[in-house]
Amino acid sequence: MAVQLSQLRDLQNERTGVRNIVIVAHVDHGKSTLADSLIASNGIISTRNDLRYLDFTAEEQRRGITMKSAAITLSHSCRGKDYLVNLIDSPGHVDFTTEVSSALRITDGAVVVVDVVEGVCIQTRIVLRQAWAEKVKPILFINKIDKLVTKLHLSALEAYEYITKVLESVNEVVASLVLEDKFAQKEQEREKAVAEGKVTDDGDGGGVDMEELEREG
Image (cartoon, rainbow, N blue to C red):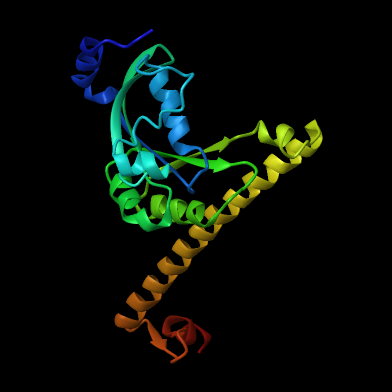
């Protein structure tokens, strides 16, 4: 059923129900196809056609990749409440990384699409880092699961193990970002302590805690 413009206008006036969501991914992991499916849920396009609806320039359609971030307003119901979702489809090619950064700065959340067969790729790592830098919460969307059967001919157990490895790979990237943040925080605390005279710089990036030395006598 198609969503009426009057419904979207009413939702727009209820600011607590407005969400800005960006879809990010490595190139060809199915990001624009997912966007088409979400747009089709509002009755704007048919689910039967692979239109790449938000790839609106002739060059994008010709090359079959997203080059510019594009947005569309959709309606979504969850737990009895209607939301207005401003959905942004961002580029997946590494040459257009700045477009992804710009989109992330105005969003409340990011859907990170990962092709289950290809797994975590270079741009997947980049977009996760970008989302982390902008303090945007990522939601993992594992795509093309059917290929585990149609392409790789895996059994149910093998498919489960394959998906688990993808999850572990994503978690490893996120864990490394957490550790980097903790290290940076420790380094800032050390530099502050050196500036206040609580710690002396030993010349190797470490420091000697003066208060600890005084306690040791």
